[in-house]
Length: 149
Image 1 (cartoon, one colour):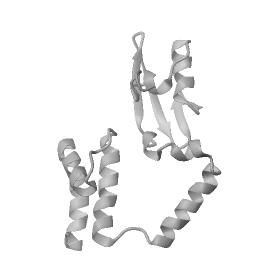
Image 2 (image 1 turned 90 degrees about the vertical axis):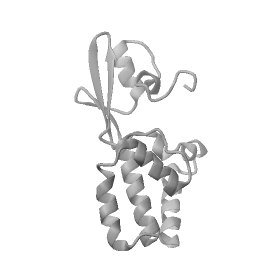
Image 3 (image 1 turned 60 degrees about the vertical axis):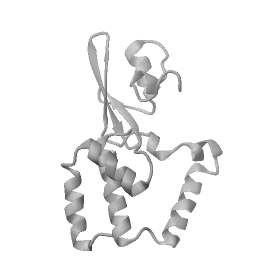
Image 4 (image 1 turned 180 degrees about the vertical axis):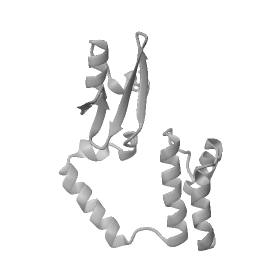
């Protein structure tokens, strides 16, 4: 385990660490393969994990409270509870897709997406507005392959 005074230095170093090295740290700290998400996600999760290992994690009472709040949010809906929170890109992420020579930029927001200054609840609605046809928005923006869609 690291001395506590080296923790801030490790956190700062994450910003300039190469992506392959971030993934190697992930494997070391989580004992699993890193998820296929953007660099910012890796940095934030690694920063949390480094601090968790050095200073301790959440108190059991806090974990239980968060679980209760989660149950309140999904209302016991099994389908909602199976959806992993980390499947949604981080708020602020920009999704860029070229369609018929025009570049379209969608920004992920806390409660959905924004395209051309308008809020949308789903990527599929944006894909439909862009193409005029029905699309799986996750496939259209390259977040999911057609085979898994």
